[in-house]
Image 1 (cartoon, rainbow, N blue to C red):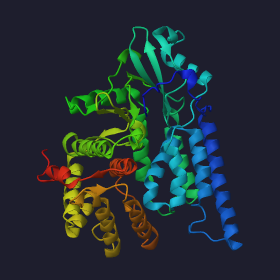
Image 2: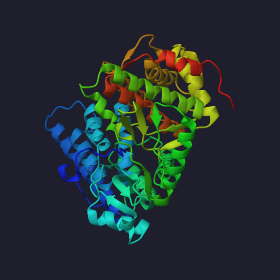
Image 3: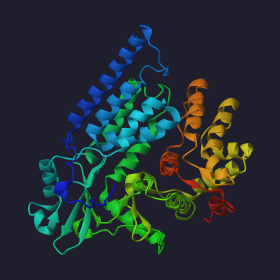
Image 4: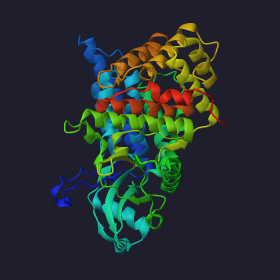
Length: 455
C-alpha cells in the first residue's frame, strides 16, 4: 500500500471516495448474507436467460461477469478480511475462473474507499488519545492510499519527521474469524468454489495470515527484520519504523518520496528501466525464498515505490511477510530444478513430496498437475529473454487448470502453506507482465538451484 504523497497540494487533489466501514459482526454477517443472496439470484436469472435461448461462454451460471461485479462491489464495501479474500480470489482467478469473472474481480486490487473523516478521527483518538493532534505539525486527512485493511496518511510530526501513517479500519481484527467462515459458506452457496473442494485447510491458513496482517506491531518487527536481511543492498530501501507513534492498529513509518512502481509502465520510461525493475523483483524473490526463507507474499504495484533520485525501489508493506521452513523451500528448489530441466518424473516426485497429490492419484490427474507446474516454470526455462508482455501463459494455465478441475474432477486443495508462496510467484509474474518486461531469468535462478540448501 503506497506511502508516497502526491506532489500536488491536498486541495488540488480529487477527493477520494469515502464510505463507512461496517465494524460490527452482526452488520458484517448481514451484508455477507445479502451478498450470497444476490449471487444466488444472479445465478437463477442467468439460468432463466439461458433457458430462453441466450448463449454464454461460461458453463456455470453463477460464474458470470454480472455476478463478479456484484461480488466485487459488496466485498469492496466490507473491506477488511472479506475484501482481502476477494483480492486473493482475484489473483488466483486467472488460473481457474472464466476471464470475465476474473476481470471483474480484478477491481478489488485497486484502491478501496476511505473512511469518512469522523470515523477516522474516532479511530485516531482511540489509539492515541483525545489530544492526538498535538503530536503533529501537520496531518493530512486526505489519505494517500486506501486498501482492504487500512489506509495511509501523510503527516509531519511535531519535531519535523515526515511520516506515512498506516491506519487500520475499525473492527477488522475482530471480524476475521466470522468474515472468513461466512464468506467460505457464501462462496459454496453461490457455487463460486466446487461443492466437493476441501476448503478447511485453506480457510485456516487464510485466518492465520489475516491475523498476522492486522497486527501492526508484528509488521513493524517484519520491517526491522527485513531491513537487516537486505543489509546494505543499494537497490532496495525499507522504511524505518517510528515506535513512539506505532500501535497495534497504527504503523508509523518514514515517508518515502517517490512514484508508484506502476508509473514505470508509462511511455516516458525506457524499456531498459522496466526490464531492470523486473530483474530486481525476481532477484529479490530468489533471495527471499532461497536465502532469507522469509518472503513478502503480497506482490502488487501498491506495495512497491520507485525512487528515481536514488534509483532504487522502496518496499512498503510487510504485513504479509512470513517465514517458510527449510524442507518446504528445499522442495521448491528441487521443483524449479526439475521444471527448468523439463524432467517430468522428478517434478512428479517432488510435487508428491510437497503434498500436491497422493502418490496413488490417477495418472491423468498427476500428468495434468505436472503440466501446470511445467507451465509455471516456463519463464525460468527460457534461454533467452522471456517476453512477459507478449506471453499468453495465464490463458494456457487457465485452460489446463479448468480441465484439471472440471474435466478430470480434481478439486484437491493445495497444501495450505503453499498458498501464499504461490501468490508471490504468480503476483511477481503479473507485475512483470504489466511492466512489459523482457528478462532472462534462467541465468539468474540457476545459481540458487545448484546445491541443496543449508540447514
